[in-house]
Image (cartoon, rainbow, N blue to C red; front, side, top):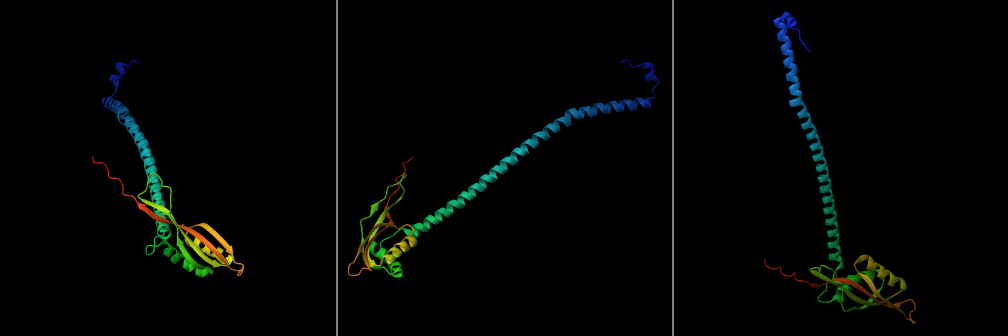
Length: 209
C-alpha cells in the first residue's frame, strides 16, 4: 500500500499529531494486551485451578478429621463399655474364696426367686485359649457349683435372674433331681462360670540399642 506524499503534505500538523498519537495508542494497547492482559488471564486461570484443588484438599481433610473424631468417640464408648463389663463381670475371691464370693453375689437373687441355696463349692478354674499377641493380663473361667432346692419355676427363675444380672456369667452345668416325698420340690445342682483374672504377664524387656 502506497501513501501519496502530496496528500501527507496537505495534512495539517495538528492532524498529523493526532494520527501519530492514535497510532501510538493502538500500538501501546496491543502491547499491553499481549504483554500484560493475556499473561494475567493465564495466571488467574491457573490460580483458580489451584484454589479449586486446595478447596478439595481442605474438604477431604475436614472429612477425614470428622471421621477420626467419630472413630475416637466409638472407641471411647467401646472402651468404657468394656471397662464396665470387666468391673462388674470379672469375679474375684472373697477372703480368698471364690465360693464365698459366688454365694455373696447370688444369695439375693435366690431369695428373690424363692430358690434355697444349701451349699456352694468352688471348682478348678478352666484356662482360656491365649490370644495372639498375648495380652499382659490373662483370664480364666471360674466354675462355682450351687446346690439347693426349690420348685421347677423357682429353679428356672433363679437361673434366668443370674444370667440377666451377670451378663458375663454362663450356665455350664445343671442337674435336677425329683424327691418322691416332696414332689413339688426338686433338688438342683447348678454350675455357673465367671471370668476371673489369671496370670499377669511381665512384658519382655526391650533389647538395648
